[in-house]
Length: 159
Image (cartoon, rainbow, N blue to C red; front, side):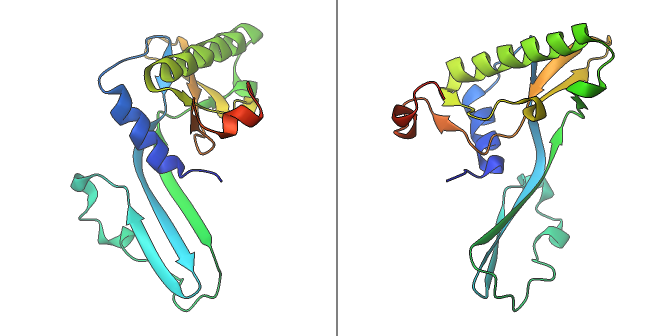
């Protein structure tokens, strides 16, 4: 079962604390909301920081009153920094730099938190240009993560 990516990002940032990865960028959660709909029951789980709680427009499940959809969960999040897909980079060298940087970010996360990403792909490997126009990699899409010692890893080790 896929995990809630919003919660995973919050857990990762909490576990990393003030540790910084100079080789790349960790996806940063700006804000997010999870809307859960079970039968006709609607609820919303806030994952916004206390400073954003005053935004009551995010406290209602607009358009969902009286729905009959079962077990539907919608995740909406804003994250940063703004990223560039690999196919939009200027050269093969920039793409290789972005992928290398992304793998270094992944090793950084794995060593410090013990969390396996389990969905590293071209679509989840993006790039940013820093203030000096250097390419840095960003790994996104953390909803398939599991702890390194999770039982699911024993079925397909190295997957």
